[in-house]
Length: 350
Ligand SMILES: NC(=O)c1ccc[n+]([C@@H]2O[C@H](COP(=O)([O-])OP(=O)(O)OC[C@H]3O[C@@H](n4cnc5c(N)ncnc54)[C@H](OP(=O)(O)O)[C@@H]3O)[C@@H](O)[C@H]2O)c1
Image 1: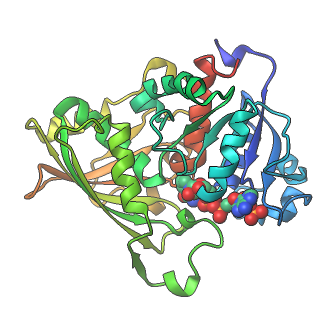
Image 2 (image 1 turned 180 degrees about the vertical axis):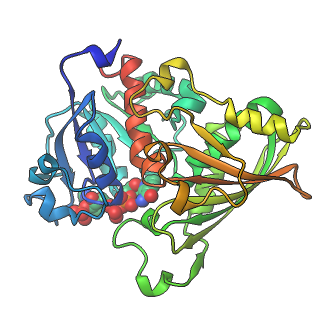
Image 3 (image 1 turned 135 degrees about the horizontal axis):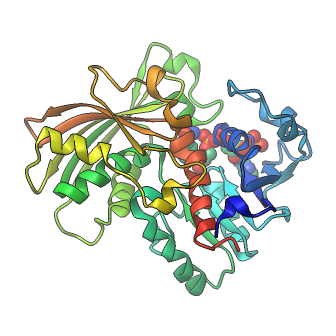
């Protein structure tokens, strides 16, 4: 199917529309070539208000007029669409997302509630497109007409994208990652300013464990074998963009030029590369010193690129490098919209 040639846009709903990720969804959905934002939903605090009143818009782009005028629904309301994007917190998502799937909706979720279920895709179209095949199993086993399709934790997505071509070429066996995560990653109002200004807060609750298990699932390393990953996480006073310091060990030796080429040449399938939200190059390798940096690089490819740089030999594992990505775009709303576009070309939305 060539969606671009179909006249009718697909109506979509948005759960958790008022939050940090929800706002990014609104920004990306109002002018989407295939999807029409038909409903926005949030908590009882917001229900019945106009979106402009409920959302406290915090993005630098202006609040789209049409989005601002929409009335916020409740998340249990019947919404006029067969597809919903979910930017709910995990506890609410655990209850609401299956309700939607039972009603026959496809739910594209940012929440962690169902990511690790064996029959739930944890999808990055450029790296593990086959995971979408789990939808049929999920519908069969759970008796749902709809399904839940998840994207990973924000730090996981950039790391998995950076590791995928290295794994294909050299076999990744060991990973040690330390994250420096932006405050927008904690939602709104998020971390109190008196805690984060001029400060670094270690050990973001549950984040390290999510990265460890989700990277293993995306790279197909959950069946045993030689793969070990250890993650430490930190909140830093950066507005947008998670930076990650990575050391990786491979099963086969790789030269600096081989590693650089693996990143620079990495592409999804032609079908994925043609999707409206797909970056032209999923990975941008920056060879200049002291890059990537959140302030300078995080908006590359409308926030959909994963940036890698600072490649050096590692005395403990084989190679060390820095990874950066936009946490609310490639790490959340943009990733979810890309997943829905991929589901559309695979015929799941017909
Ligand atoms: N921020 C990131 O960088 C990022 C990246 C990847 C994944 N995620 C995940 O995405 C999800 C949303 O994160 P966020 O940062 O956008 O959080 P947030 O700013 O706190 O927004 C939460 C949203 O959920 C709604 N909500 C909260 N409690 C609810 C309830 N009981 N019933 C119905 N709706 C409720 C809120 O509505 P009200 O405004 O009405 O309260 C708001 O729309 C989380 O699961 C998070 O882990 C976030």
